[in-house]
Length: 161
Image (cartoon, rainbow, N blue to C red; front, side, top):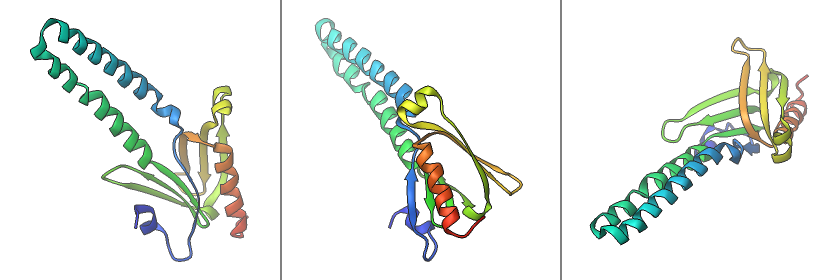
């Protein structure tokens, strides 16, 4: 049983799961790949110059590969879930943070998409509720139009105004 299944109440079902868009990983990917290329180049050059240090250079590749793996793991564990009753935001890898908003409490949803966002299908969503805190913000969310439509479809299906 995964973590999300433990959070669901009786008769509650998951309708849509969305993550941040993959473009949020792009800076990390570019930096880690560039660092890996530099380390590999220097290690290969080390083979020609001084062999004892060559393996140390290749061992340094653990740093960018480990960093990239960690960032992908964090990205994968941050989820925005629409169920038939509520909107759930789960963040964190080991220590989890869960934020719930009942669909009936959602007053409005504001969505913004840049030209690049429309092309690559990511955007910025603010979910405005009637509570004191009032606003949940999701930046660089994948498929914001589908997410927004699903939120309203589920809210309306539940008999909410």
